[in-house]
Image (cartoon, rainbow, N blue to C red; front, side):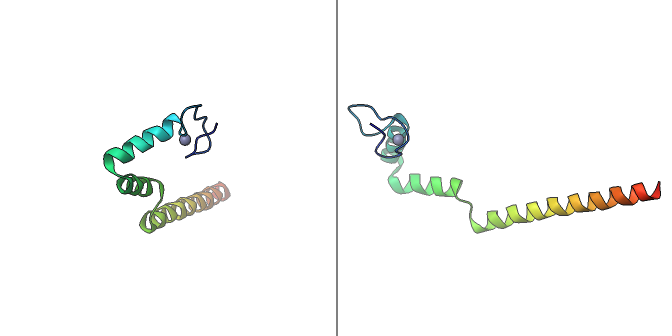
Length: 79
Ligand SMILES: [Zn+2]
């Protein structure tokens, strides 16, 4: 039977959860459900500031690429 939580891993005959989800459940009992959820969301979901940073980095890379192409073309013309 597949795991009741992730529905991806095999859980086993006598348990509803796979070993990974058992581990998550253990962490929830130690730190609390809200804390575990908070950590997962902070790590896995990018907030707006980080999304903007990522966008800016990508735009900068693109700009450098274009400038390099222009430089290379003007150098070959001059030769
Ligand atoms: Zn699972």
